[in-house]
Amino acid sequence: MNDKVFHVLFLSHRNSARSMMAEAILNRIGKPHFVAYSAATEPGEAIDPETKELLEQTGFPVDGLHPKHYREFGLEGARDLDFVFTLNDEAAGEPMPEWPGVPVTAHWESSDPVQATGEPWERKQAFSRTMMELDRRLKIFVNLPLKSLDRMSIQHHVDEIGKST
Image 1: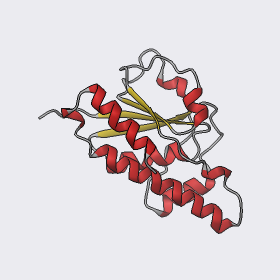
Image 2: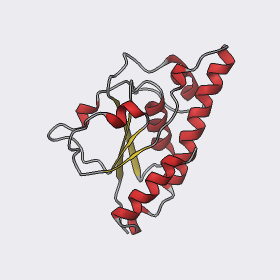
Image 3: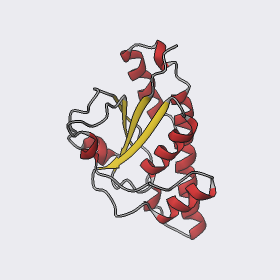
């Protein structure tokens, strides 16, 4: 049996909420077949406090989660990537490096819960909605028969996942 481990990078604007959630979710539900990373076009200083709280409350490890710039993943000698998913329009529109490994790329637009306004409960609800949306998409993704699909079929599937909410 092929024991390939797929390496996945999630990109967002600040790498403080959505991409951190996606990294944590995939590292849990995709283990041992997927390893997830996250990065930003303009990294924030730290993980968003509400994101950190939600991840901790739902049992996800947060140690080691910190914003990183996407350039780290395009440097010479960087790990080959199999997939790169952008989670916002700014990241999708950014000129990206030639990723090592020539990964399949897709845009999975996801609302930024950090931008949510309103009462504290409304903000918490926005964070939960974003996390549930990412969880649904990633559960579909990890169940794709990637080892038996050709690149065009994989591209089609990951594009379709990005259109679902």
